[in-house]
Length: 196
Figure: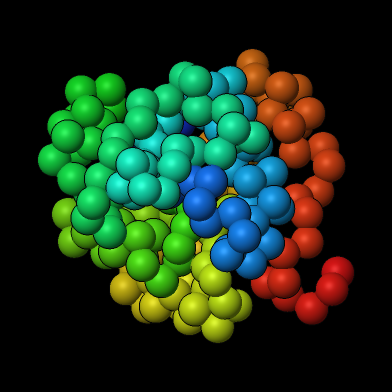
């Protein structure tokens, strides 16, 4: 069996947006920047016809997904468990992407819902790609330690630009120009590395 190296293909991938909700706005580090990148990924999922599934943690109390992220083409699942890997969501994904191999995961909080989602899908033998520049927490310590923990468990930690170019594979891709426009401006700074 070949080693897992984390390649992705549009026809075996789905985007998983985790709990980017109004109530978290004042609490999460780099929240506006996370939303900007999450919206880029949402636009790319639409352009590349890749399913988008969205979770909302206890929306009755915590609100809905923030309006600055376009999720109109996605399917939203309310939940109370920390993990997105709830039955309704998994059943939906099996319907819209029966050959799913790659879970492209991002959102908040890294050390809770994102991490538990990653571990659940890793346990089910999926490749999990955590988008670091679209994932955050209330503190940078929690954010960075969660990214490291998911990496230790076998998740691939990457960036929005990297994953989109991996999905395109070739400048001759029919959606290349559309995706190029989405990522033309670099992702905003978010404290993952010293000021660039």
